[in-house]
Image (cartoon, rainbow over all chains, first blue to last red; front, side, top):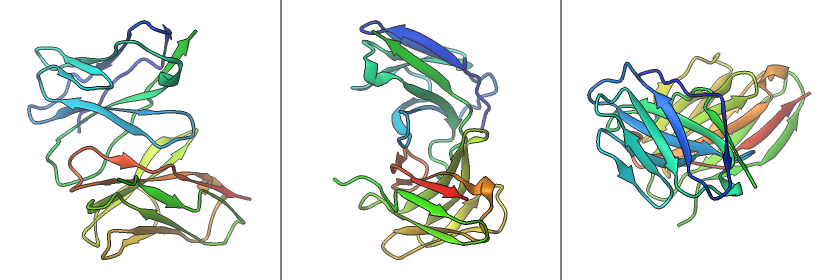
Length: 112
Length: 112
């Protein structure tokens, strides 16, 4: 699986959009970008994933650049409950494995 | 439907003892993966079980083992506990492994 690079920390004002970047310059053609988050002392939570088109669900939007070397997770209206560590993971979605390789992630602090 | 459950939630053991942790996946999920999370090493993959067979294994010593039962419930065992085994142990389930995973709340193990 390709390696990802994320900033260690970010702040965001409550009610504003939080934009979390991720670099994955060595991504392969069959690898998807996944995002998980972990709220303090809880298990990680799946947020969204995509291959090359932008994706949106009830939690967030995922914007993947055309060359697929980077992506941005967008939380449109951040709340205090969105304070968490956000992990960007690149993997083959249909692979025969449940193994996820977590990096250090980005600690997002949403401030009132 | 019910989420992933892990028991016990907290555990205190002494060096040299062994411990068994349990994970019940979401109904219908056949893949169960285990992770160890420590402040120093972050989230690390231990192993994955699918249809009662270990399908993937991380880079952990043989003291760490697991199994999966016919109902997909899984247990992991750590023998001859060391202080460094103190961690949050998380399990995650998915339908087949390659798609999104759902994590349990974890078992907090403290070794004294």
